[in-house]
Image 1 (cartoon, rainbow, N blue to C red):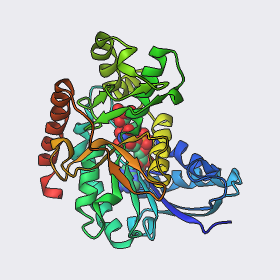
Image 2: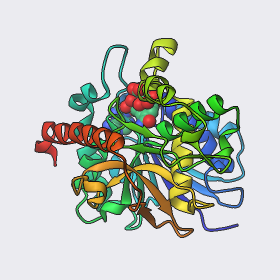
Image 3: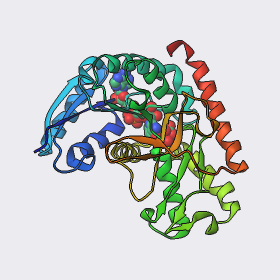
Image 4: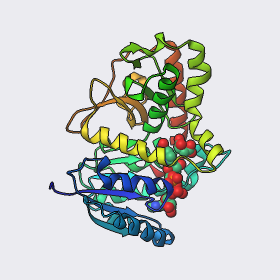
Length: 326
Ligand code: NAD
Ligand code: LMR
C-alpha cells in the first residue's frame, strides 16, 4: 500500500459532501491503491450531524480509509493537507444570484485562506466549490500569500460537464466522444460555454449543430442550469457537484489526456487579455505530475471575445465588493 494522502473537506456535513466523501474514500479520486486520511471541517453546531456522517463512512468499511478527523477548527482540518475541497458555504435559494452569497460566504474563505497559509502542505491543491466560487477562490488565495497562486482553483467543471452533456444529447453521441469543451469566466450566468474548439468524434462541433441552437439553446441552458435545478429540486445541485469536484481534482492531480483539457477557474496570467490575478475559467491542460497550464494559443472569434469580456467584467465587480478581504 502507498503512503496515505491527506484530504481535507469543509462543509463535511452538507449535501455535496454527503456524496463527495463516499466517492473519495471508495477510490474514485486516486484509485484503489491509494489510502486516504480525511480531515473534515464543520461549524460547531453541525459537528453532531458530521458525527453521523462519519458513522456511515465507517459502516462502509472502505479498505482505503485510514483515519477520519472531525473538527470545527480550520487549522486542525488543513494540517499538512495535500488536497483540500472548500465546499462549506451557504447555497443560494430560488430567485438569488450566486453573487448574492458573497456577503455571507466571503468571510469564510478569508479565514480559511489564512489557516491554509499556516498549516497546509506547500504543494496543496485547493479546489473551491462554495459560491460564488471564482471570487471565493480569489479571497482564499489572497489570504494565503505564502502559497503559490497555482495551489488554488475554483470549480467550473460542473459547467464543463453540463456543456458536454448538452452537446452529446444534441448529436446523439456519448459524452466520451466530446473533447475540448470550454467554459470561460465566472461560475455564474455570465459564463461563456464555447463550442468553437469542441469536437464530436473528432469532427468540429460547429459543423454538426446550427448557430441558432448554440445561441438560443445551448449557451443559455448551460448558463442557467444551476438555477433550473434549484427550481426543480428545491435544493441546489449536490451529486453532480460532487461528481464535478472529483473530476476536476482528479484531472488537476493526475493530468489530462488525449490532447484534451478541462475548464478550471485559475489565476489569470493575462492570457486572452483577461486581467492578471482574477480567477477566471480557462481551458487548462495538466501534466501527469499535476502541473496545470492555461491553453493560451486558441484563435478567438469576435462572438466569443465579447462574451469572455462580459464575464471578466462581472468578476471585477465581485472583486470590488470584497476588496476589504483581499
Ligand atoms: P449545504 O448547506 O448542504 O452544506 C454546506 C455545509 O457547509 C453545511 O453543513 C454548513 O454547516 C457548512 N459550513 C458553513 N460554514 C462553514 C465553515 N465556515 N466551515 C466549515 N463548514 C461550514 O450546501 P451544499 O449544497 O453542500 O453547497 C455548498 C456550497 O457549494 C454552496 O455555496 C453552493 O452554492 C456551492 N455549489 C457550488 C457548485 C459549483 O459548481 N461551484 C455546485 C454546487 C454547489
Ligand atoms: C450549480 O451550478 O448548480 C451551483 O453553483 C449551485 C447554484 O447555486 O446554482
